[in-house]
Figure (tube, rainbow, N blue to C red):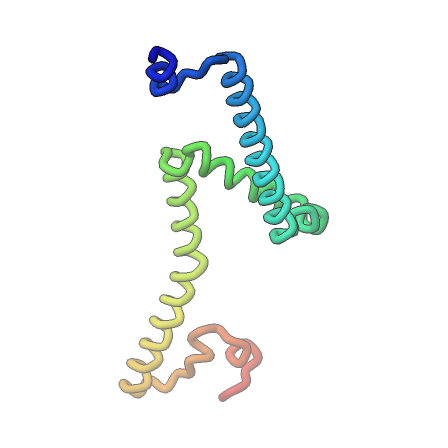
Length: 137
């Protein structure tokens, strides 16, 4: 009866045999997982053409790796990132928004000036090619 109770508890008659079997199963499972991971990585590598990208654009690849490492390393919500984003926004406003506002204000001034009958050409006011060469008069 003791043998039956021991088997119900998960014990077997030969403990060395079960340990060896478990180690063998764990080893096989680990090997299968490693094979699947290696196959998945090679599929991703082929799909992304990482080797080709590195050969065509090595500096861009290094920059991308630095950026990914920065984000994964937790650098996304730091004071340095806030400064970089703030600088980017300031530069973006100066390069994109200010010329657009300048054009809108010039058009508004031309419209108001034309309605008032000032008689000046928008090309002269803007300093365009026609104003510099004397054309358009």
